[in-house]
Image (spheres, rainbow, N blue to C red):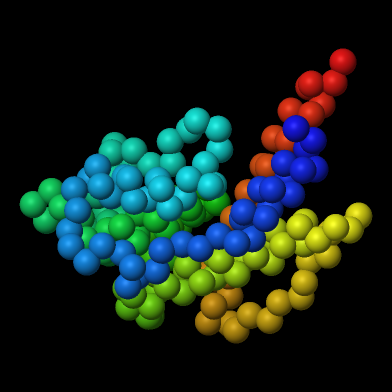
Length: 183
């Protein structure tokens, strides 16, 4: 496949990405296998090759490290799912310690629901801003200017960094594949 077409298709998909919001998370506790299914399904478009985005041992480690609360009777609620979603995305950019501190800070400032939804909104906006210019048929990449309020600067910065990382990985992957297939 032409690497520009592959990059275009991926960018189109990423610029339209929608993550599950707080009110759409399951309203009842789920078992670990269900939590894994929800998170992996939600984030599958960002999966690189065959690596697992989230495994049971990762979830167990997050509990052990105090990143997420212990499950109640082996069941995980909305907060668990939301925090695991955020951790799964941000561990590509930040250390586990930084993620833990950031989550605790956002929850302290905004509460569980608002902190999670603000993350989702910021991630969706960042992916749109980073990937949309590739879907426009031009020979240049024009990144639009963006106004960000100071209280959202940290969350916007990290979601933009993540979006740029995903774009860079896709460019490298498609260019190398194209380069290696040439005689």
